[in-house]
Image (cartoon, rainbow, N blue to C red):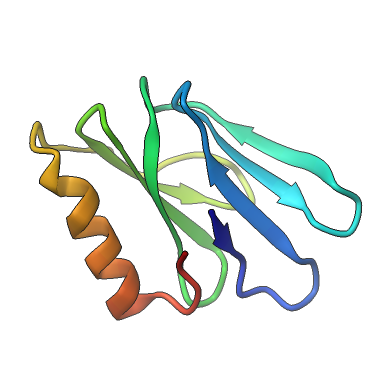
Length: 100
């Protein structure tokens, strides 16, 4: 789970066991976006500092960078190592405002 740094709308992202990333509007308690791309559990999430991008890492060995407005991804990083999740979390701690 990761909290958006955007102050206009409070959004929480969560990774799911089915490989989806869901964005929730905290005030309305509704899902506002569902992104598909990973094939199994999403274990790492992180917002960019400006809230325009979301990074996700999955146990399928892929990492994605999502454009929050369009829901589209830039080219996918494929790494068969489970260490990829740790790498994403390390990047989150270094570059992102809010990471959980």
